Image (cartoon, rainbow, N blue to C red):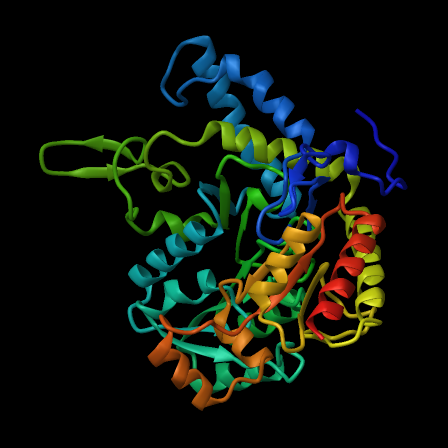
Length: 435
């Protein structure tokens, strides 16, 4: 299979891009999806691989039949493909399959809680709840602050590490924000963390599908210790995610879920656990999810992640230029077209509730966006400049009021300039009718 890597018209590779949907007035239009940061549609190639494998699908491990043996071989060899994709040392690290990034981070928080009872965890104010809440109920958590544009204040990392004087065992940071799209300097953060005796976890859910990541660096202190990401954000459905980290970490802790596949031996009164990753993947695994994920990685590799990034950022900058020309638009990210980020654009129409804007885009033109706080409420509260009084009011009235939030555009490799034109025309109509 060969594709012209200079061709940015990727629509033919995606399932469902020409699907017709009804508008509120009953008219059928081609659906437009600008909600790729939540979930991407699948590659055709992914669906083809899943269908072609399905006749051979069987339970893996210990089965002696042909289908079971084949399924087991595909499942296990897939881990090397994952390692190669994120450029990690497969001898040192293990690849553990989970349902999604959220489960991956919860799993790691369980392990760290077992290893380090009195540790401090550093997170950031821009994290998705999935890289914040799992740590709160187990550790003392401190946070790196963001500046007025929402970018991470890297100098705060060293201050916090010095403040806690060796007690920080893990720095948790998103590779790219799911709200603003900002990329964080993860290798620089890793170097600082390692110099203070801490490890680093990168939430790669928004970075891995859009930009190359190199867990293993030429300078060891810049390498990434733990990485989590989800297939459903990289054109592969079926509920699969990945947690990657040093084998020795997972060897030293009993699994949080026990049962089939996690053990070497069970007697009446004793258990000998399996080695990772098997002991960390309780129950029958999601083989079809792995087939989908590896197929998506094959396609992303063929297209070239850097080519994808360039294509998406061209669409982003086209949208940025168009939307800033509209009246009554407030952006909630750095409008510099050279800002280092993935293709995410948060905004609001002045005087219009974010949920209404999102609904009107769907009703009028079949455009899907996301509105709200995107599971990153502390971050959005800062972007919106909410005061302590505002937040206190929210805490006491959260069931009775419309929550503050944003409208988020997130672009995928298959989005087009003409789709952006429809978006801008629709926003212009919404703004005109509002005023």
